[in-house]
Image (cartoon, rainbow, N blue to C red; front, top):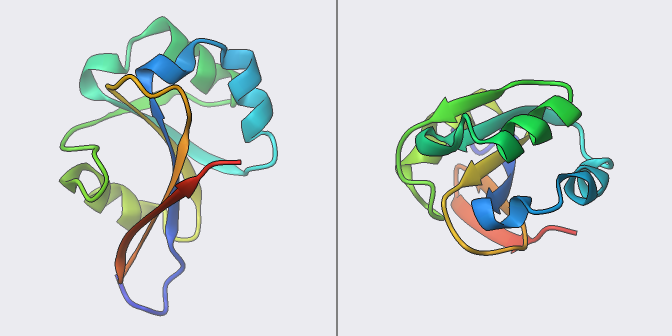
Length: 112
């Protein structure tokens, strides 16, 4: 990615954070979500499907490491420069994180 490009923004959720999908949709209401992705094993999960449907889209599977700095974000970052996408990964955190990916690398901050 060129330094002149806007960062790709990912709201990263662990599967444990999908307990209250309606609350999560409310938190995402201020964002313009371009896509919903899920780690391959989770793409058919009922909560992932419900989240995507409530956001008006279908979840797409993504392969690779979805940890911060993982290779699973490389293609997604190229596709979503200047956009926000939701990524659901395996894990036990209940709070979403905002992951910014640009030419300088990865940065995280709490998702508000």
